Image 1: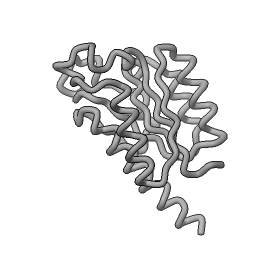
Image 2: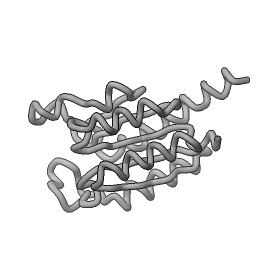
Image 3: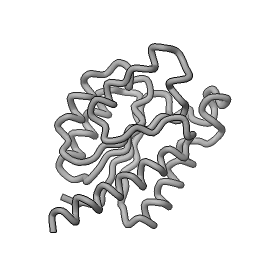
Image 4: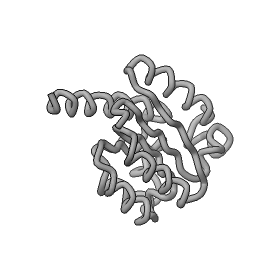
Length: 153
C-alpha cells in the first residue's frame, strides 16, 4: 500500500464550484481547491488523487480503488451525503481514515441536509469552513496516518 496516498473525492455539482450559488459555496473553483490541496499535500509529504464525479457509481469505484492503494480518503460527497447508502457501504470496506468535508455549514441549511450517511463511517467531519475545509481534512488525514505509522513501528 502507498501509505501516504490520499484520495480527495468530490460528489455531484462540485464541478460547478465558483459558479453555483457562490453566496453559499464561495467563489473558488474546484481547480482552485485542487491546486491548494496539491500544494499542502506536498508540504505534508502526501500524494493525492483528486477526482470529481456527478455519478454515484464512479465515486464508489474510486473508493474501491482506494481500498487497495490509499492511506486515507478526504471526501465531499455533496448531495450523496444525504442519500447514498451505496457510498456508505463502500466506505465501510475501506480500512484507513476517512474525513468528510462540506463547504457550507449543512446544519444551518434545510433539515434534510442534517443527516449524513457518510458520517456513520467518517473519522472526522468538517463543515462550514468553506474550501479551507479540504485543507483541514488533509491535515487531519496526515496526522492520523502518522499515528498509525508510529503504532505499526
